[in-house]
Amino acid sequence: MPGPARLTYRYLRVSVVAMALLLFVAIGLDVLAGGERFGSISGYFYSPVRSVFVGSLVAIGPALVAIKGRAGWEDVLLDLAGMVVPVVAFVPARQELGPDVCGGIQRCIPPDLVGAVGNNVAALIVLGVPVLVFAWWTGLRGGAPAVLAGLVSATVAYLVLVVWFVVWRGTFLAAGHDVAAVAFFLLIAALAWLNGRRAPERAQARVLTPVRFAHAYRAIAGVMVATLVVTLATWVLQAAGALTAPFGSVFVAETLLLVAFIAFWLLQTAENWDQEAATLQP
Image (cartoon, rainbow, N blue to C red):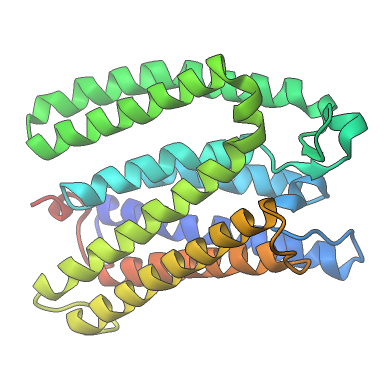
């Protein structure tokens, strides 16, 4: 019978996959029920899926922070990903509401939701203070350089969020969702690539050989980066008026990214299934 630490580690990892799948199921049920079609997964914030959309992403955030990867950049990337994903949940994607509603521009967050977004992000910022204090207090006791690098990275990310939200509120509302979403998937892609480098160092693993795990991780990182590059290029071309992307193209891109994230998480969970959480640290 596995010990409590190992069981907790396993359940926490499985819960991340469960939350991602919950979002897919909720969207699928809304589509089957004949709900409004949106051109992106993020657009389903404005549908009956909203509670699941926000709740699943918020639940994933603390889980990524709580799960301790191998010391060094793996743990730092997990912590940063866990920090940015609640922003994706709290700051919705903009809607096509027209210049009369959006103050001269075509897309914006509905005015009746701006107050709620401000409240939620402000609450996240306030809670971030004791969380960072606790992280520094516990982290410095270890004294490892990798832990210090993680603490500095998390603090810088927090300060960037605070300054952007307080000083440039309008820009934050306009771009906060997209920037946080891109940052999250870039962090996961970097995490997959790093695992692709480290996997062959293992003597053995479940399901696949260490070398095949490495190949799978690198493939996932490649898919995620390629999807992000194509999506960002499409946005730039659309903004320049040189391209009109078909309806649903963003939905397809987000689906690919989420499926790649789930695939990575399942593979890493399988690879570390018999690993005690404590032994992940060198």
